[in-house]
Length: 297
Image (cartoon, rainbow, N blue to C red; front, side, top):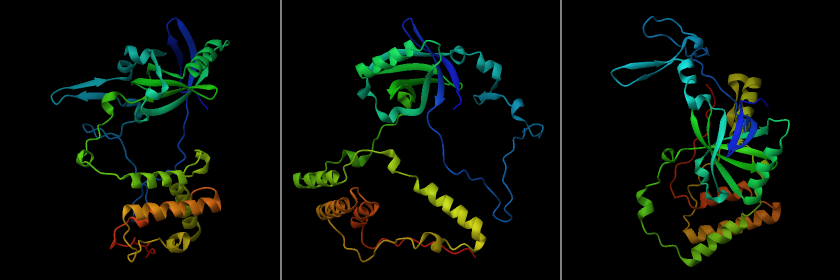
């Protein structure tokens, strides 16, 4: 890994030098755009509206336009901001870890001790761990002042940037204002369904099916070209059964519990077919069947 930022955590008179690394990475297959007629690559170029010239990145500045006037801001202008020059992750308070709403979490970063004597780093990590506290911090990164949460993950200190309060929307939906009655029996059955799916979370069990299928599609198309039959590659797409009976909520819950328990008894983990069966059992009669993939002309 390559450090993207170096600085120091500061709280009181304590200074903890650190290097900052991105904690996550993107494994998605990246596609580019082409002309459907001849396959030519579509590129976006930076042309100046005044002179019409193609402008390289090193000659591009930023600007703000209020409708009447335009202010051009150079890289030197932006670097002159005090917040941009700061190399500190400034602790402003320590809060109970369970007070942070996960909706506020944004990007995650690992912090490596950047000192010949990492004792201050180890002390801060141990203190957060023992007190079950998270440090709320201010820091500047990539021309933006950020709010962050400094917490412990295993043996490393982790910094997670947080959304500002006004960046989180309120959920204000009319349906939430309606009074909905839930019977004790429905709640009991729903709890039993949750119980039947209960497990310890292991992220390694899950994979990105879309990316796997996309890779399969790319490999198949490389091998077979435009003659590729996607139905043969992926099998027939499951459509909604128009003859399926419409179940009420209690019956759907009961059958779902039975299916999940049966699957768990056989495989010791809930299967995908169980979850799909739950979804299909509550579908309405007369839903249009899913369209099958067409063969290329």
